[in-house]
Image (cartoon, rainbow, N blue to C red):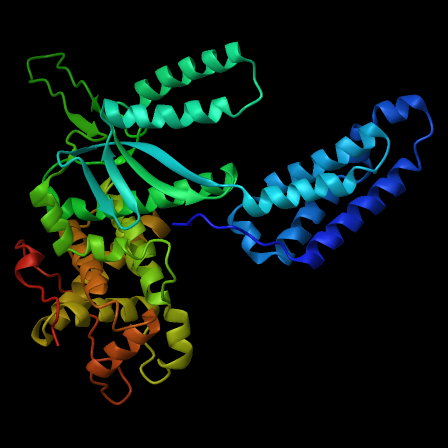
Length: 458
């Protein structure tokens, strides 16, 4: 998370911005001749050079690298535009230095720390709160909601509105926030920046929190119909079809459950399980400088989380395979290390997953089984074939355990290419050819993959 800090603007950038504003004012105002034009000066200036403030804000952000962490380009454009409008409406630029000095002071010294609250559905928590690195999952009881209401009330007090309007606004937001937050579990955190940059950060961090929770579902409640999402999404319902007899045959009323029917329950035992599968270890990397390997884990975990939201088995498989593909930089590895073995991208991925997870005696059958999942995904995506894949549970467990293995060993590698190099050394080369056969034999096993895998096979 971003932390509260002051930004020191460069003197060169301030001088350049001041001069550009002065020149723009002089060039523009010298062309105004009639009283009507002067009365409409602000609108006429915007029409004369619609890109001026965008370019000026961009130059300021480039000249002050730390500034982009606390103020958005749109917000900076608005502040600069307000200065120019003040000048042209007044008909002189005598106050330019005063206005820009005030802007510099605001940008360098304002307290931009904010706390965000994002309510979720599909999750309950019986332990008060749960920390995921710098994020917190909080049960929003009345006291927690009151804290949020106090924050918005203080913000309203700092506005220039009349007292009556302030009272009305506080009352409205207190009712709205109580209705929307009370009784929910919220993702909360503190960030530093203006409203637009903070909103971007809040959405990004909430997405990471959802990915981590969805990753935990197979370990916590594998047999329940769980779907953790933002409040307002995934409203549970039952989709029914009515097949009714006209003669003497029986009727049939099938149904499909859509949305979450069971909440993800976070309690002491769940916390222990989440720790065991690496949730807190990976959560500690949120908003830190991560290696390419660690960034790839977050990316793959996101797609696994998406797979847990799907009602359709075919969509779940598509997201599971994307999760595996999104982790590996096979293009880089193929250019640098794969010249002799000449494995295609799918084979490289299937080989890496197999070698990382299993004893060598199981390599052949697991390689083929994972490859079958890729083939079934291809039939759905590229050919639109009817979904007939029988080993979805196997693929789900494979990707789930693969992500755990990556988290467990994320300090050993800095990139996915390094992992592929490690796999290549573990796999014997048979005169430049892969040892994997391409038989169509299916793995016939209904036992859980959890009974066979090894976190540290070598």
